[in-house]
Image (cartoon, rainbow, N blue to C red; front, side, top):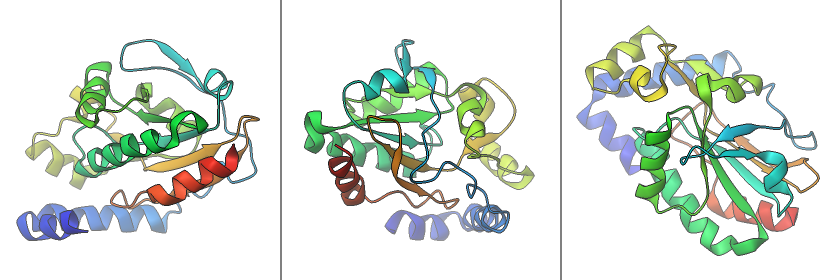
Length: 206
């Protein structure tokens, strides 16, 4: 990806630190015990960018749902993903829904939704509680904490806590009966579920 290559050239120290973090997460098997295809998707009740509570159960009353976890509005890869998902929702129409989940406060959830011109809700996972329940939440580590702070990326300000914890990006496609029919997760935050795969999974789930 062009963004990754540019980052290595412009900010080599940060890029190398990110590669070490990704390697550590992969070695530790992060995400391996997250809900799998064929299993029920654990329910959630989370506030959206307007402060309204949204439940998985209510969403599934209408159509299948793609649940996509993002790290935050400050993450360029998350912004790219949000833009792609916004375009995908237009193609899906009423055949399926997308919901984004991130561990940031309402104002930042609203910011990324407006920037992407997304029609779907962006939910705030307070203290990464839901991500933790799915075994998706990780500590960024001291090195990344220092580098991110030096770059002005203040997770405590964005999230309202000082845990320096993020979800690994993941997408789950859930049928109306609550079962997962497709799953994508990767400790490498630069990788996301292909939009073509997401569209196919939602169409099949319907």
